[in-house]
Every structure is written in structure tokens, then in C-alpha cells.
View 1: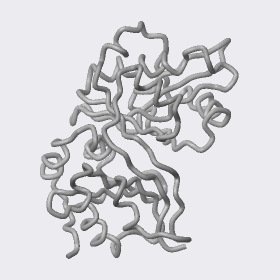
View 2: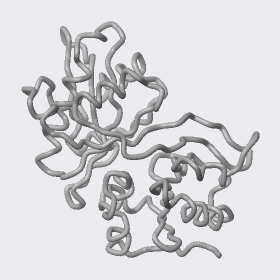
View 3: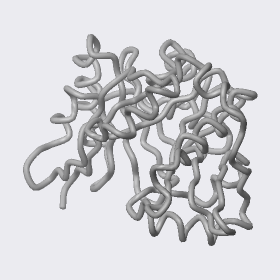
View 4: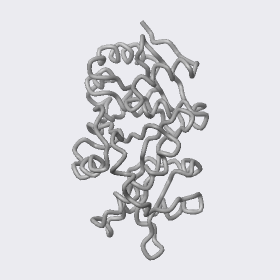
Length: 256
């Protein structure tokens, strides 16, 4: 059975808000800022999103471990409808539905983490300053040195939810968002980077805590993605009050 295409934001919100941390990206993408680039499907109560706003299609499909079977049914029906080649973030246990062998390029197991204890981020005085479009060149230079394979859309600077720290005028640390929606009270951190020459000074902690403090004025839930084997990053986020709420595989799939 093919999944049903959904165009009603209220219907989608009702399904996704049952587990807002797990579905943080999708909830954020219901916002007017992202909605025009989204295509949505459901099978029973499982939801999948194909996002077209970053230059190449990205499939987002998350579910709780006990409901992976339902997600597999959704993805099986969705396969004929997916783009020829696409990026995917899929809950562990359902990723093989998208194919194997040369048709799939794995990018590793990741954690979805959510801020469950606000004390860790609110206890620190803000140390980072807001970034704007005027800082774009400096930001791109920092990503080139510290995070060359990241996904960054300059449009996200228009949210006002990017912060940075400078050292002698040079931008050396930053944190921002992949999605931010006051309407749906959700944010997902992203594009966190510290220049290699200043690592070990606590600047990553400073930009993340500053940004979370800002975000909590407008949202109820803050989430992020991190590689499961990145012990340093997982340790940092855990110390700031984040907990793992799900595991997913990131991959590129489809016909070559």
C-alpha cells in the first residue's frame, strides 16, 4: 500500500507533537520559513518528509524503536515515489529499506539529543554575540577551516539565531540552528564549530550555551544531531543538559 500524501499542517502537527524532540526537524519544517520546500507522507501514524530546500532532496523519517515496523512499512511504500538520488536520516532499524550495496553511501550512526535539563545552559553568562548577514564571509571562512563538510544555508542567518565569538577580530567559534520555529516552539541546533587553533578553551560550550539561552525565550524544545562516535561532542552536550532520545542512520541512497 502506498503512503498518503499529506498537505494539512494541523494534521501533521498533531502526529509530530506527540514526540517533539524526536520529530524536531519535521516540526520546525512546518513553519512558513520552510514549508514551501516540503513534501509529506504518512502511513498510519508514521510520517516521512522530503525536504527540497537545501539543493538536494533530503528524506527525514523517524520513529520510536517499538514502532520501527510501522516506519518500515511507510518507507517500503514510499520507495517508488522518492527522487532518483537523495540524502536520508532514518531511524536505526529501517535504513536498509532504502537499499544496500553500491546504491547506498553510509554516513554513520547519529544520536538525536534533546535539552532536558536547562540549568546547564542557563547557568552561564552569555559570552557570544549575535551574527548577521554582515558576518557571512567570516562565517564561511570559519567553516572552511573547522567544519568543511557541514551543511549551511546562509538564509538561516535571517532567523537571528546564530552567535559567534571573535579572537582579535577573527571569528573563531559559532553555533546556529538548522530549524527554528516560535510558532511550533521548536529549534534544532546546527553548524556548531570552533577553529582548530583555539580548541580546548571552552568556546564551543560558550556558543552553545549562549544560543540555547536565547532560544529558550521562544521555544519549549531544543534538539540537535551528533555522530554517535563523537565522544567529545556527546560529552559536551550531555554536560550542558542534553540527553539522547533516538538513534538514526545518515546516508545517501538511490540509483547511481
